[in-house]
Amino acid sequence: MTRPLAWIAVLIMTAFALVGPAQAQSDQPIAAFTGTWQGTGVAEDDDSLYFAMTQRDLDVIIRGDDSRFSVEWTTVIRSGGDPSNPDVRRRTATLSFTPSGRPGVWRADTSGDPLTGGVMSWAQVTGNTLGVFQLTMTDDGFALLVYNRTLSDLGMELEFHRLRDGTEVRTVRGRLIKVGS
Image 1: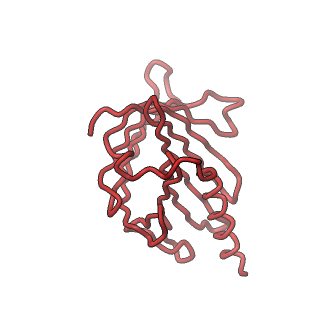
Image 2: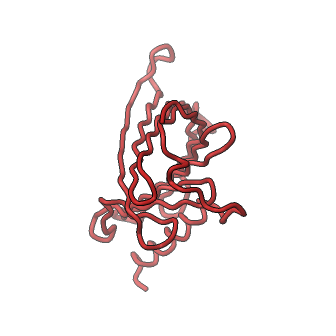
């Protein structure tokens, strides 16, 4: 196996491991996740031991059903600058998904080939968790983004993981509540 293909195999195994094992309950339909969700989270990375963690405002809109759905997420990051007036950055992304042919797994409409510079994106439902994954190759390795959105009695829990060459470099954990259908 060539080195880039080995990396992709390792990344895909890591991605499925981050979603967690299949739960005793059946996988939720996409309709269970749909709606407008808002909340806050905290980001941590290797520097969090020495510098402050960053707070994030989180907005997620999930639309569709088991035949086609989209996830739009916005993150507002407050960090650095004057503590009474921190620097604010806003990031928004949207992905649309269609069934892949595997139960519980969807392919992003814009999914590309990471070996040619594209971003491979897919989604998977495992129990109460909707995971969205984005895999890219870098000049010297790979990067994997994992967004796990888990339904709970209190709303939705978010766990974001950014891995570089298999090593976790950032996590964000947050809680969201449903504010609209």
